[in-house]
Image 1 (cartoon, rainbow, N blue to C red):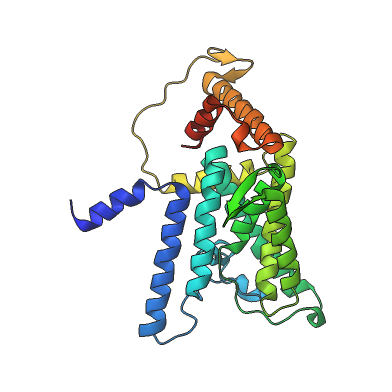
Image 2 (cartoon, one colour; image 1 turned 90 degrees about the vertical axis):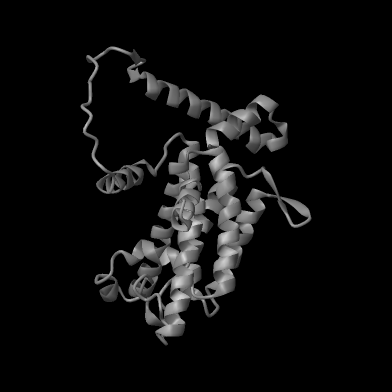
Length: 288
């Protein structure tokens, strides 16, 4: 096996967020090489989100790609370390696609908030902003989602255990204070992501996953790049294999999600350590 094939094999074995982290690192290295050899300070301008709406119309893809662009070493290091840690929590508790919904919708809403503020608000209220880069809006969405959905759950931060709700509150407060600093645009995007995470958690508690529409769109886009199967689809006769009006797979998936929701509710009220060994094993397998 060649070195390239070996790297490709390892990459394919990563979970979805490990792949996103890897792509961020590759983009960062590529940007640094352009900066050194191309002698340009704005090496990732093609990916960054401009504050001017007329410029955005010429590069609409930047509403998502800005989340893969970082200029500073400590910026990308801090972001990716938090993304790695928080994504492991989400993937252990929820479907990978739902975790991706929260992350990418956080990036999109954060970008839209950035565009809104810098194109609608009076100039006297805003500070001139550089094009937006970084994954922080998506990461904020994930952190706030967990802080709202399971607020009483404790996580280890350095040497102390802190409840997720307090971490979420601290993040929002820091971002609000940041609106009066030099990185106003970045903090606007962070708050946009936080708002998405909050709204996603509130609606999920009510039994509604607001990311299903976005998920269908992304599945459709991904299908464009997948090889078409030559196998014919065999359709069962209507009505056969139905459970309460659903197919067996749909019925099993619904029961599995209900069990996950009950376990998450138990974690929210009593903490992760209150789970039985069987419940912990079920969550672990559900997150794989």
